[in-house]
Length: 345
Ligand SMILES: Cc1cc2nc3c(=O)[nH]c(=O)nc-3n(C[C@H](O)[C@H](O)[C@H](O)COP(=O)(O)OP(=O)(O)OC[C@H]3O[C@@H](n4cnc5c(N)ncnc54)[C@H](O)[C@@H]3O)c2cc1C
Image (cartoon, rainbow, N blue to C red):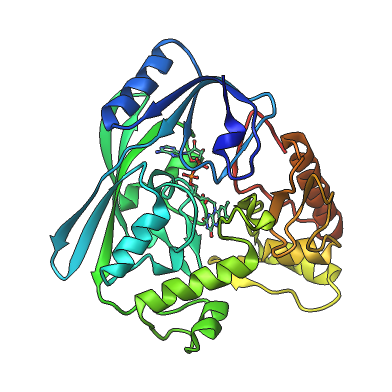
């Protein structure tokens, strides 16, 4: 049996009943079809950087997506880059940035494979893949056919999409097409910390390569860049999403807080509040938890880390402790960002 801890960035997860590595699209579809025909549960696995898998493992077929291939096509003044699901995401960002193509430079250093990027509409430093994806090619397990979803049918929203929200697991992402600008200057910088790092004003542009290196520097400081030498990077990235609150909910948070509460407009009178701020102000600081098992990263309040000897049960106990503490302090229930497999919060 294949131990899934070797395939997740948390280094957690028990064995898979069956494990199939799919190097071609045909292998990928065949593996999923065979499991479906046998009534086996299926788990698609990319880089394992957004997965929290039970200590008991997975009682079905894990399909590891290893398909390869990147192609470029002219799209007027822009370029369409079509990428197979199994391509490492940061290798793609590095390659297109080196070509002087703009649109994904702020998404540098995000671990995992390209096929997972539309699932939770990967985003960072003011950019999201939803802004540049034109189509997502999928295998629909229910209809047993290949479909092409144009961007507007993917229902992208903050850290979500149709693929995550509606019948999770129904659609297997085979390839993603991104439309990038032939412009070696970045998209306008929308994130204050990045603007400061690059020494530009908010809304100004910088070179795409400069933005990439700025983002990688910030990520390394926060333990948000995978690095075997950095124990704080043994995580699934941000464990909780930033809650989107109604005006009434936000008023309750403000009333409970001792000082001003940071917020960003989220449309329709709603606001997004940084989960990291809520966690810190509920009394859970960096490093909180067990020094050898599960703890909050020493560099970033939103990342929960396997400090070496943790189990998935330890990590979830820590997550529940934090969620309950934030709820008691502010009346806000934080939601997990990673996909939980065989466990609940
Ligand atoms: C240090 C660190 C930093 C991170 N920073 C960010 C960040 O800044 N922004 C951000 O958005 N995320 C971030 N993440 C989370 C994670 O990297 C992304 O969500 C990434 O896209 C997951 O890719 P993956 O290949 O590892 O997916 P996995 O973890 O393998 O899978 C994630 C989910 O997608 C499904 N899936 C995977 N591939 C496919 C496919 N081909 N078809 C259908 N379903 C599929 C899986 O079944 C699972 O439900 C970070 C994670 C870490 C560890």
